Length: 216
Image (cartoon, rainbow, N blue to C red; front, side, top):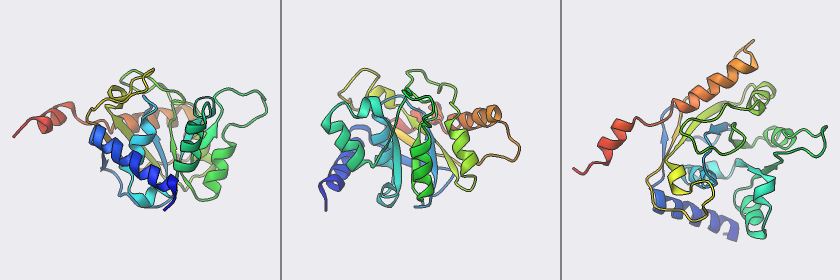
């Protein structure tokens, strides 16, 4: 077993130890089929939490999107994203106006890979996601047969808030909802609102979570 695989398993175990991370597959089973997972984004720990929630067979064919300006600033970050998470780097700013930031994602989907995509484009410390950017709409247009899985990562902002580097123990969950596709004739604006609403609909019921957490 390679060092990258061992590191991935170790990170998943640590994430579960710190957060008790559990994947709740409410709207779809955890099948190793091509998908685009769209999730809220509040922490650099999001990627590790989703990784921990995936069964092993899903990790092998699912690639995350990583911001080049953050994840290439050190040799360790670069190794983790390329060797462990098999991530795809995207640039949040374009030096060349003719550059298509979606090109590496299109290439990965064309090769049959699944993606973990954060449609907000950047992290937010607010409860609700920011409006989704148009990237997921264009991917849905180009790959209409690939199901889009709305995903909610709960409580992760308390594990590793923006600006922090050391995680703290907090109970977290990752909930996967029913697949959605771009509807025929659906406008970009309507699709982005519907996709964001679908992600937000996966949030756990606070009352049910509180009752679950109470000692018996």
